[in-house]
Length: 506
Image (cartoon, rainbow, N blue to C red):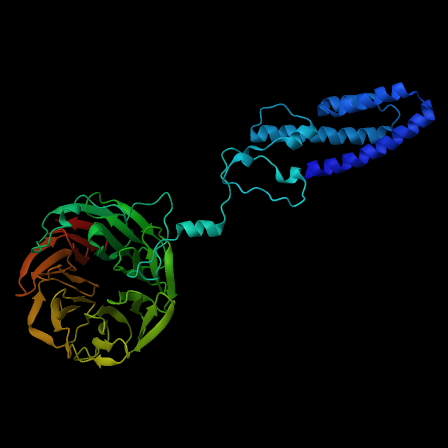
């Protein structure tokens, strides 16, 4: 509307100049005139001001025979441009009324001025033509960023890393709010005994590389969600109970995703990647909340059991780093004379934790399993496992004070989770193959069944107390890297393989 103001200013100057020219021409050409004729001329001038711009332009040409041609042409050009500009604005904003006069246009109330939620301009002395302008009918008013953030910020969940839960928009993706119809009947029941899955329920395909791990959501009413991490640089969340649909794909990493796990609240995901970063991602929005650079390829990550804001990262380095998601700083460092850390396992209470490494000597696996004091960063023991095999994965028993270590000797060994962490030499779980793959093992929720993958593509289920193999399912053609047993549904498990395929069994 700056052109409108410029036109008004130029018009006022032009009128004063024209009046002076008119007076001069009258005095030179006509001389003295009678009063009646002067009154008639003044009436004609007043009526000309109430005409439309086109009429005013015609009247202007008819009553200024004494003016110069250049002044007349510039005046007419300005009025033609103004009229065309007003008609273009009327067509753009949908005004169907005819173009009023200049004074009527200034007094017209724009349609947005009647809206209650639009802020009105305070009297700042500016021209009303600068403030009053029409808006398209379909355009929503601007809302300040502070007001949007105040209405979108969620509540604080103490069990989630990084504190506040991000607010949700009106188009909320129903990943966390929906409850599966298959899981809902088991929410009020107590799991009596874990069963053994024997039949294929669904096959989930979509990863373009080996799937390193699968894990069910630990929250009961969200336990239909299945997390998978792959070497194709992505990790995904699936509906593993009913539809088998991929609910969201997360692309936070530029390298292979080696490890992933749920936070206790079920709203965030912790991942470690070969791009040297560990990331905490929001499940709903898919945006990363915390991104930390470890300066080494991350092979494993573990949340502290009593303080989920703190987690450990290990990998292609001789150190294990502890991070605080709230301050986004490294709080502790654990140094050992090893080449890389294969897995990390927090013991019950989070006072101690176990790390598995690839440090092997000629006759024994000295420092293969190391027990650490979390607070003091001191080594509690490095003589836990004395055999000459490395341990690619660890698993904690849900009820008893024990844990198992998957070994490259094609068996699983049992250890006490109390100091001095002695190995039970009379109990061994044999029958599957590891052959250098990072094959994971996992307990059932009641601790009676121990499941493990195999390099042959099978999923093996053992009786934990007598070490007897209960059943073996030929799940995949490629090596089966992980078997995850469902926390609520009986006899339900998910498996993944080296070819990128995921299957759900029941």
